[in-house]
Amino acid sequence: MSRTTEGSGVGRRAYASYLLRIWRLERGGSEIWRVMLVDPRNGQERRFSSLEDMVRYLAAPGSSPPAADLGL
Image (cartoon, rainbow, N blue to C red; front, top):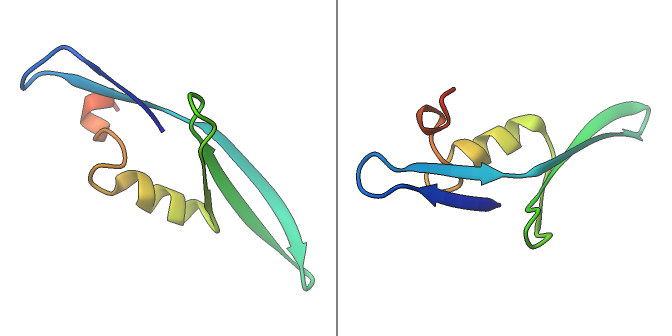
């Protein structure tokens, strides 16, 4: 995960950047999706077995900036 902090103090904004890879596998006659986030600065990979797992990771405190900080 790449993070940059702009400004200082209470009003500072945080920024996170990832490369997102999503692919589909066939196992036992059914399709499963796999998800990976890659930090573009150092190539560190974090893999997930579902989109829901990835979203839970991103929503966890300390793993990414809050949506309000990103203007979402």
